[in-house]
Length: 218
Ligand code: DX5
Ligand code: ZN
Image 1 (cartoon, rainbow, N blue to C red):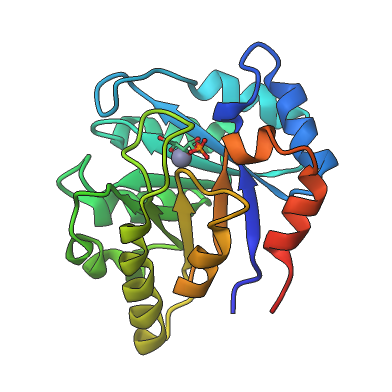
Image 2 (image 1 turned 60 degrees about the horizontal axis):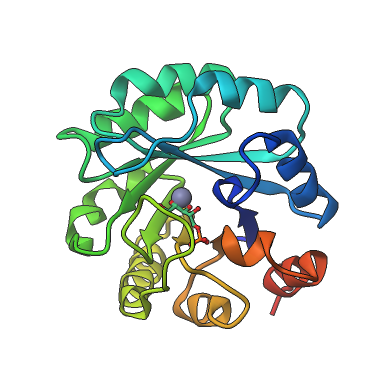
């Protein structure tokens, strides 16, 4: 249904040379890049603001998959849309009115994404899927790269794939956290079509081959 996509996460790149990190992704043939926005409140870490995204946008044709790990994302949606984000994904735990925010994201001309943390029940996102172009299942607790993949979260991927079929929807199903060359196929078999890889991509000796394997149609 959706062609498989690998989204290298520049969280694992060099933060003093982010444009180079984007280029490394592009050189491997990637069409997406995953940009983690952390506020030090929703998650215990800090990363990038809209200015960083805007400056990266200037020089890049990649699809900017922007993951907002921020409390109360509403005031940030428009600045990131204006900065050139292609998709904006918000956490269901971060706002009392996620469907309104998802609609705002679409109205700004971006793809809308909803994401849930490992302890959050899948039932919290099911009513939102009609407003979402992407549903992201965290396979680590968010905040840091390089953590171990939580395989039990794939049950949520299976549920999303079944609901998508039943409702005739077309949202992408993305996995994020600890995804690597050993476990990405488990994610695919569960129904994922969009694979974030930070550490596993940037440390991979054969990045283009990794990207091609993930994006091969089956
Ligand atoms: C974690 C971030 C992830 C992170 C993944 O909070 O949302 O996108 O970059 O990094 P790896 O692939 O190293 O787990
Ligand atoms: Zn992320």
